[in-house]
Length: 86
Image 1 (cartoon, rainbow, N blue to C red):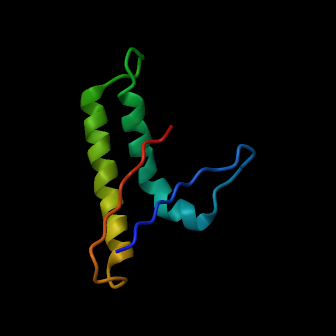
Image 2: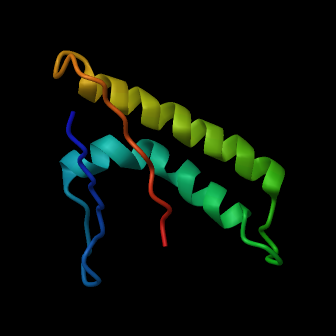
């Protein structure tokens, strides 16, 4: 079993995202960002209930990507953990 940790962060002067990365993440990443924002206390956009809905959408799509990436690659046990965006 191998543990691989990957963190993607654009450069501060980046003006675009590579197409391959955009195709993998941009279609669902907004739900994860919204969920994090909606859990911030004492802000006008705070909404824990909607945050949970957006978190579930994000996790569902992320899991689909994980499965698609793992199928046929390895017969060993695999796990992927989301890291909090800071």
